[in-house]
Length: 384
Ligand SMILES: Nc1ncnc2c1ncn2[C@@H]1O[C@H](COP(=O)(O)OP(=O)(O)O)[C@@H](O)[C@H]1O
Ligand SMILES: [Mg+2]
Image (cartoon, rainbow, N blue to C red; front, side, top):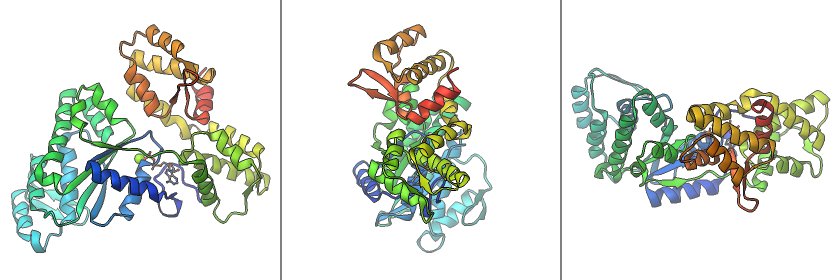
């Protein structure tokens, strides 16, 4: 089977949705700069890496990941280095490079590495200088910045809110400075919703110019195709109706969950020396997947890192009720919020929805788990 669990899916392992790429390019042209906010494991990194290989004419994508960066100047340094490496050091940029080499005392330059001799360089200013040099007729640069919201969160925690506010404004100014605006598009992603983060430090204006792009879960038809792609040339096959049973049981059709369950199915089939996937095997695969802490633990870790003290206890109780009672109705939810003295619960509920734990069920006036798999894991591992 062609399985990948955890790292970004690439090449033959990537399930391609060309219409999503099309939508992405359309949105990018409309909004110029985008944010892709989606819970972890939805496939953001995989999607961006695929864009690199399928650029639209007139665009040039480049990918960076800034997850560990906790300092604004470090962030701009990474952008600056990336932009420098995109330009050809000979030809029309020769003079510019010679000046930069002198001014910044560049010690070493290779394809992936540029070492600056001078300390205390203001990389934000250097990006502006650099962008003046890029001609508008060149392909538009699309800077895919993965885990940008983690960078913002790092700056909030390792430095302070004011530094983070200032950083967000600098990013906005950069996007709007005429030389940058004409030549570069920024695409930020994050597993932590950027909006919620920005709201938490009272700076919604700093990202109000960004368009939003979403990576939806798979449709039933796509999920079936992914099943087939994963099975590849293996002789295993689904018993009639078993595939439908699988997808109904999964409900939230994330490629990640499909990979996880298919991997368990693969093991069980091998153990039982069978090549027919039955509903019983599917049930067993779900149960086995729940034993694997590493598949789901990031959901708990995530919750711990966003919510502190009372908010964490409140979120945990909400999820506990939703897990044990197949949802939490609006009245009960209000009781829990009051019990924990949460003044403004909207951000908390927003995050629980955005991060993929809960969905709002308007008809039944309740919130319930988005994924029965995650619900079962929560029940087994968190609710004691
Ligand atoms: N398009 C896809 N095709 C196949 N598997 C995918 C795809 N997108 C995501 N996955 C599955 O989800 C996992 C996490 O994907 P990733 O792109 O790292 O998500 P994110 O960056 O949103 O956390 C992958 O290891 C793979 O199992
Ligand atoms: Mg990722």
